[in-house]
Length: 455
Image 1 (cartoon, rainbow, N blue to C red):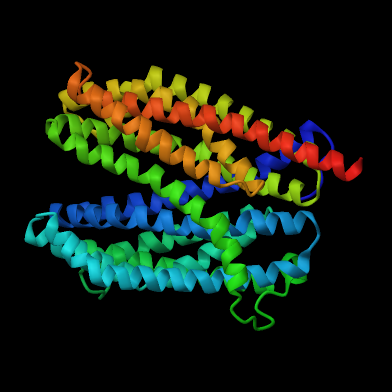
Image 2: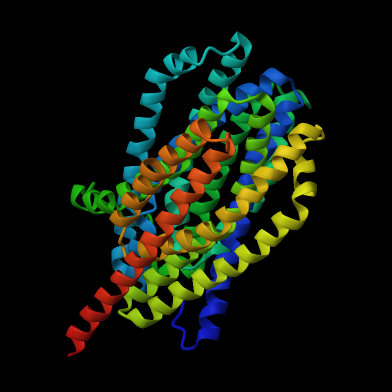
């Protein structure tokens, strides 16, 4: 990261941060895709077990890792203010916190996993695969969360190409060990879908070790002297991290869990409708990686400028990011409209499912514009360390507006299953509007502070 003077320089710098983040997101998506599809070639029970295990793990990981995202704006602001000596302390404290979170997840899983799976009334073979898959995954939870901390640190400095490199080198390792352990090749045990859990754990350990080597050996990290001295646990620092991180984590959890809730509520409809919903939602989630990556880039850029007390620059980055997201939303919406039939064919060849998937994809167009406004604003607000508004926006817009409205339309009107999508669209739109005015308020507040400081 460096200071920029013109709009053109800001656009170029934001793109330099955004593109590696986006490629990293796609790489992580590809890992999950490889786990599910390669398990499916072992057997349908392996596919179902891995899918169930993954659906239980992902909301927990995204929510709990969201707490650690507090590190990104903190480091970005220290970096912008040239407070380099404060960065290693907060990074190490976040790593301590990550270990505690990991151990809490492992302990919670040990106590709750069997009761949860028993409650789901799964076939015995599917339940066993899901259980063994999650047990295999648990051996990688600690390195995963430690890596996530180092990724936040690296990204906050604007070095997003490094995390892109780690992800792109981890992907073939994940696929290789999937191949060896799922199918039992070259003398390795044939573990079926459970093998993808161990392959993922190996990938987590690889990512963590590579990240440690990079921050210790690369010259661009020399000034931070990470891991060169021992820091005692600082509960005061943990409190600051949790004050920012908990609202972020809960906001992400509310966002991811609402889609899981809708999927569960959709179970009352025909299998064809559920399959079409899942297919369209999967592709919409893939497109969401674009505004999500812009959001991450804005947290870094805005945090850097706020730390340097360049509030006008932070404001310019915010609106450049929103403009980039809206521009891409126009393109993806046209893609969805004109090629929805071809997109549907990626997922199915059944005519009934194809037709319904195309209809759901039309509704997904409206997701594009709400996400294009809401996600970048969330990232910008995190750069300002303003996170409570995002938390309340996620809770109210999804759970108090979107879900009740969608349930009403789905069950008491002719919209049927499409009603849930209309509810989600209404929730997303209301959240985006609220966050937009919140951003304007925060920017005016910082402008006022800057005026008083220089007045």
